[in-house]
Amino acid sequence: MEQKVDTRSRILDIAEAAVLEKGFEATSIEEIVAGADISRGGFFYHFKDKNALARAMLERYIESENALYDDLFARARELNDDPLHCMLIGLKLLAEMLEEMPTGHPGCVIASTAYQDRLFDEGVRDLNRQAILGWRKRFRGMFEDIAKVYEPREPVNMDALGDMVSGVVEGGLVLQRALREHNNASEQIMLFRTYLKLLFAST
Amino acid sequence: MEQKVDTRSRILDIAEAAVLEKGFEATSIEEIVAGADISRGGFFYHFKDKNALARAMLERYIESENALYDDLFARARELNDDPLHCMLIGLKLLAEMLEEMPTGHPGCVIASTAYQDRLFDEGVRDLNRQAILGWRKRFRGMFEDIAKVYEPREPVNMDALGDMVSGVVEGGLVLQRALREHNNASEQIMLFRTYLKLLFAST
DNA sequence: ACCCTGACTGTACTACGAGTCCAGTTGACT
DNA sequence: AGTCAACTGGACTCGTAGTACAGTCAGGGT
Image 1 (cartoon, protein in one colour):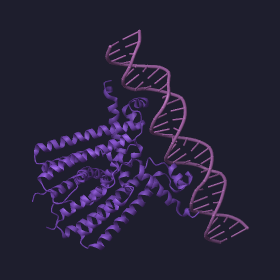
Image 2 (spheres, helix red, strand yellow):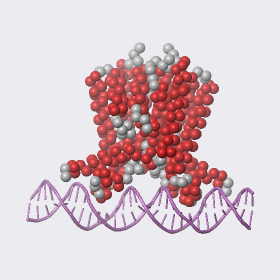
Image 3 (cartoon, each protein chain N blue to C red):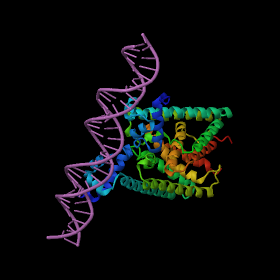
Image 4 (tube, rainbow over the protein chains, first blue to last red):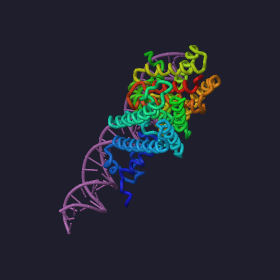
């Protein structure tokens, strides 16, 4: 069998899908091993316990999310050199991407872990923290570049504004999940985009 | 003993504190009964199962949250009749309230349940949905009143703008929880307030 | 050809929490 | 004295996490 190529990744794929659908605690090892077609022993060979699984999932998720942001804003940059317009285009692309996801979206693992954090060890919690701090830094940098060109019409805390990107996405996903609607997150992003247009308006 | 006054409320108090601290699934009935100083049998006398507990908790939480909003914006109204300024004052009060909560804040139960929703039955999920829809209606109404007086400088979807209040609060609480900082939610609200100032600016 | 190792399988076991059942107690009210 | 609500306490089933360990099996190095 050539599907053995990477059992570990297969476990992570299945676990991620299940966790995003119903939460970490509600996902049993039993169903993961059934889905991955391996034995319980096989699972514990790869992951010491459920915490190790959570850590691996988070690492993978954060990495892919960062790669996605890199790609998104790189594409935006190609379309327009101006930092403000680059940001506005990037957010539009992000909103479109969220909308195109038919199943709603892999509701952010970050929020999911944040609200069940007692289940996890310090390593997992710290990963979570570092990811958000990374996004803060990324977006704060972009906003500072914008502010060099366009004077903000109201004073804003740049760290908080950076956090607002993550916050709006997370919040939108919570709404989407709870309401069972499908485009709340993208609508929230577009609203935030309007905010930036007003805040850094040149006139 | 006169503490027997209401065992049911005592259970709810203890459960709510525990659930907000570490999540629903991570809170065992064992620790709830230990905290409330009753027997396991006593717990199941009041609540058919954990789902019934969740529903009761959500009902109580939503009711108190609505009362809080009522009170907050009523006070704001007393200070200023203008719908925009009333909203701005209300948000400031909300931000201050969130900041004053020493333990961080009862991180919104809504998000918590949204991300573990497979643990709950349809009744619980629907309660959650109705609560958010209620807030959407409340804030949309307020924004429509504002728009009657102040023409928005950019076109916005009023439902989405209404949702943004809930979204920004939820998102801020997620950040706060994950980062272990204490004022992200209030900062996010203040940033949203600046948004409204720009959006409905009279000049 | 031989051995070793990594990637498992399979089984058996402990521990714990949810939920069920039920028999019995206790205090208040009638 | 009898009734009822609000419990207590214990015994039981079931599902899941996690441990332990013995055995299988395919490939790669020697």
